[in-house]
Length: 513
Image (cartoon, rainbow, N blue to C red):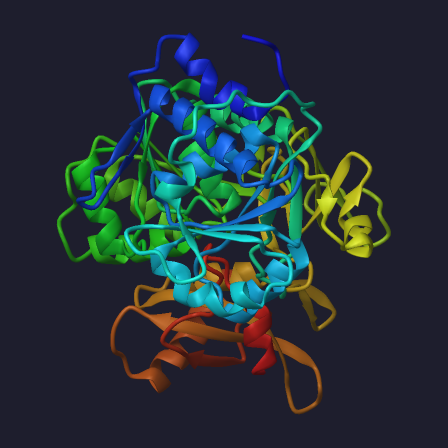
């Protein structure tokens, strides 16, 4: 095989030469039961590459993907990469106005969309001044679109184009936990950088593994879990195109029997709450991982008690593509984000850019080969985030004497109470430890003197006398983390505002304070 920087050569075509052509690469869950082998995927992606060329989609142009977790996702993603077209997977749960903004911002000339999602993007797609072709995936073909089956019909598989590992391979749009999503540009080499580090050295994925990621493929964390990591070793990934509720995920785990499972803290917490009332299914899990937000200590301990398997809680970002700081097999300390993943370097800096001492809180900076090339059309924000080899994460951390890192909150979530920095996450962890609390988020609110104090938004597991419980929770937090840190106000709500990737949108809670 010709040496090429094209990521599709390594992740797709290599497996045919190495004798894994008949191995199942992806299979769909929830009754659909379609599957594709590595050999079939190599041909299918080659046909997509040929179809793009036949359609006149030029190299380095953008192809937006509003595609569910289904067989066509890897076919289109890797087919674009083979052709030198830049795939841009989008969050499938956004509002039409956000799709409109992204289509205009990316100047995509091609859109691939699952038929179920067409109604949400139709108005934005039809208004786009740049889109030249819309391809729908499914049985129906709405007016003004073409069908994916017809798009690739009659195409012979094309090889991956030759390119540098530094060429732009794909974009991801940030999750929007702090506002409008930004286009993050990733190069070909970044995909292997994550599989060679976290995938190989922390997750330790093997060819015989079956992995299921509740986090979707459009999410950087889910893209690694459900595609890059299994494809790096020739393992099998389970795709689920539905909403990952505790009940639906439990059904997939029982039916598909994965050995590896990737979830997010919100879902782990909800699954623990469900399993405290129901019997656990028999599943052959050997490893579970979490990212997106820091995992509450109480949730990790309860999960281990129920399943007998630890959750490897870690930290990653869209800008770094996957996890760069993590707990590891045999080295899990709940309540911490672990240590630097082999291949990455970590720094903590204070307000004036100087490194902080052990036990002090600082902003987390990371260095590694998976770092993005920058934001699209966001020069000032790129300069703020990407400082030479180092990437600013916007997360506040404390390093312990043992070299582990403890999450303290986002840089813009931290605030001072009585002149002392307060970590909202610490208060949230204390609240979640109460048996009646499912989830909690803490933000700054001003009292009648204009001073900032913590306010908590709490989701309960069931019904309760809310006035009495509010007073009880305040005392509970005082005992757990300190008298000055307790929430002065507690508001009970049905659900916390979140991105589709499970991150709490605290800026929306602050707007109501």
